[in-house]
Image (cartoon, rainbow, N blue to C red; front, side, top):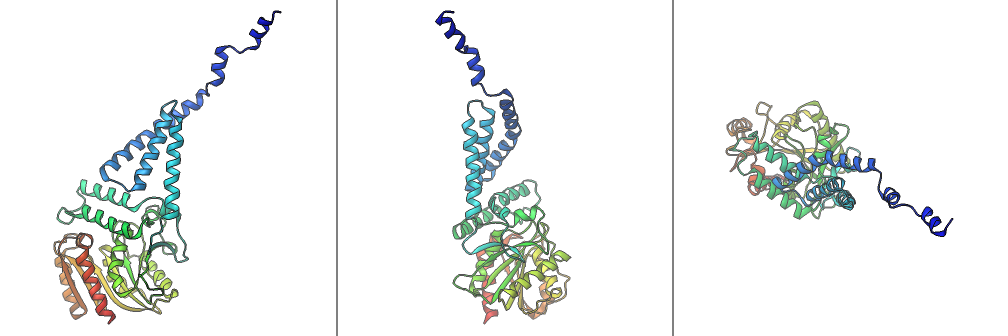
Length: 368
């Protein structure tokens, strides 16, 4: 046989080379189908991000998922898959490592430690999305929520500049992980106070426990160098039920174990209603109950508390009607201090400076 014929037989044909270089068809089809499944999610998240305006990490999630999805759909652009996946991993790892705040921490009580799931998503993203949806569907009275979005955005800006990345118990709450035996609590340490002896326990309202509200309360508490602790129950904030009562008992026990000797009980909206009930019901062994702070909420039929009480109320509140709160204050008589501020049910954020001043002034007077 001639040498040229031998060479021809040993050399692969162009068709064979193409078959060897081509990736398996089933792999490409699987990637394309996966991209098709992910595309609606990516588009939906992108649209929501453009509507709400998320945090930096929120944009990172959107961009990473979009790159991953596009790389799966477009053949020859597989590098986009790796770039999107790398960006997603970068955002997750950054939040897991750095979302711990400066003075604000999210602890898993009563044992201590942290739930890593609470660090994965920025609280701002979910909260602003929910607020937009509630306003769009008219679930919030217009008179109460007129400045709510702007006030909420401003509160997040203030907290971010002071604390940096923080964890949020809202994630674990909506995953159904809160119970009286295992719950998350936001803890804000006072500046320059190594071992505070006084604490303010702040009960959250409807929709769950959010770092931004706890941080706002802590700014008023700074005037007496007290620890601020904000425990969590379910999304509805039903503190007057058994889980809320047991959660408050566990919070008191944890504070006593940390050397706290004096405590104020406070609450916002549903948390205020719960605090006005639990102030009679929950014992506090080893702790001196110094007072009660009710913001935009109280159970107006509850027995009169036997401690000094501050009531902070928005003048045009329709969700916790101001007239009912005023009647409750009259029942309390000399035990009550009433501070009425402009705004509606969300005055705690809409007029945060006036609310902060009222709470801080009352606390300093009590501590004298």
